[in-house]
Image (cartoon, rainbow, N blue to C red; front, side):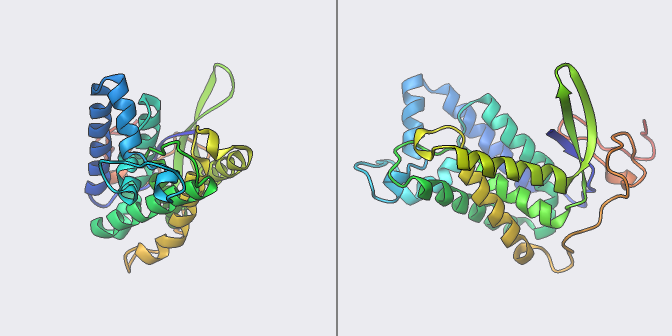
Length: 261
């Protein structure tokens, strides 16, 4: 199941979410504008290298302090698929979390989740010299916060049980995000952090951080474990979504009483 949008109403403008997406895209465009050798060097300079961060290996970044690479690494990506997947998840789930907290608290929440994620991955292999880059750790925290906030909110997913048979289903967030977390956890157990690849433990650490921190960062008038619509698996049903603010995702548009399908 691959998420493509959600149906939870939005009551404001998620300025910080959009700004983070714009910043990540801008940094990625800068990365791909560099010659290959310079691009690789930038990853080692501004990515988080556990051996440099924990002082377990020789050398380190000459550009910025090792601790600062935890933050710069959150805005770098390793390819088009990497940044597209991360930004899609942030677009779908970030707005509701941001608006439940407010802009300033969301910035702190996002960065703290990213720090926890980076440390979780780094501590699995503190002598590793493989740089960690990507926003997925911080975004995993957003997913954890979303789960606590809207566990029964509907998420549209692409479902392909067999090749060439694709359906769009509307599934409760607790199923989508719960399954996602289980996959990350099991994959982390089966992986070797010292060999590179997907940083599964960063995903696990960031997600748990989001679960724990959400109750402390939400607005006073924002309830946790909010109830969702009565039906989940009818992808074309819209009756339970406020018409003025239902949305289809980055390729869709808002629907109102003047625009129904």
